[in-house]
Length: 453
Image (cartoon, rainbow, N blue to C red; front, top):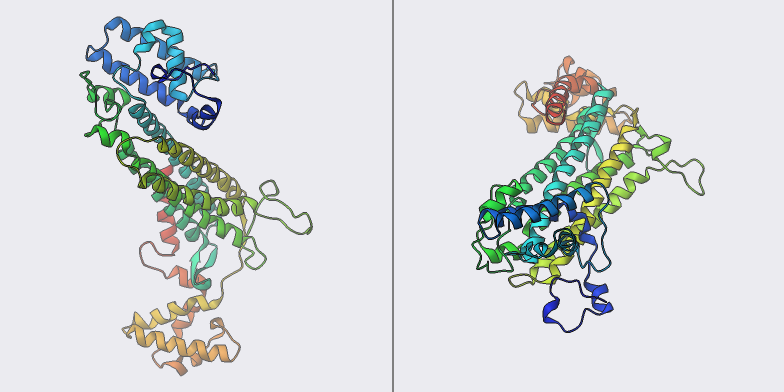
């Protein structure tokens, strides 16, 4: 194989087929726009500091602009001999600019180049993930408005707990996802720190000025230590954690989307074009999107762990091990992107018609009816427990309770307390900020729409 690598001068022969197959990478080709952008910033700095004269700087920038246009138009072609995306860009620049193209790498190592490209790429992807999260949150908010005053039970320990608006339940998922969006945005503050100028590990004899290339990238911070700049991948593992946390939230939502469509729940139905059937049972309509999202969360969570494991045994500074971080984080990122879209499609198709909750969900309200009149809550809790035990022994539920049933447990009960045994009345009487009341749902919808449009 002919040698078009960036390192062939020291070697008397080109790389073997085995070496090339095992070490060359195509996974980083998605960073093509980022490599061009990083190269433009580097050349801008070389020109501004006088390391390259104006003619060479202009020639390189024009060549890079042409490469960028080829990429945008879909005309850029990778050669079989391109070891990676960085080699491909430099090869094409040399083809366009001639010998001057060989000056593109002046004062730069592939070590700081790779770190720069990856940071640029993750910054772009983070913005895209935030957009995907906001789109799904918009679907959740739309469904919350659509279901109106529908009341369902909330659950603790998989048992009906309190009556809440279904909208409140849907918006709980929205708030969790919005925190994921905040985490992506917050991570960018550490991702957008330029390593350009760090070189291979110890800097350069050229008077490189990282501040200039940092500004050219549109960032405002650069490295403080050249070894740290090329060795560190904490920004990748942080991005991986944000992906994992987001996918965990999507998996929890997926679990509920699965439960809600079961015969036992009967809360929801999804459209035919986003569900599947069974090869054996004609009656089945399966929410495969949600089940696959729940399953694929394992891969994203594993990726977060893999990114940390990849780094844990490396001394400073750069080792080829770090090539593997891209395949791991890119695959996880793709899964989160696709899951946000797919869950949004499934949820968009949902129609909700849940059965009313059991009247047992008003037990806490009955205890609070005593407590607001000054009865110590522990005594109120005990009194309602006595009511529940007596009704259960008679095969009745809380909605069947009479004033005599209540007074038999505690003489401090009043006739008006029977009103709270209606789940709808329970919700209407809810007063706590952020709680499961209709007023709270309205406030949440307003706040979420202001955030995601």
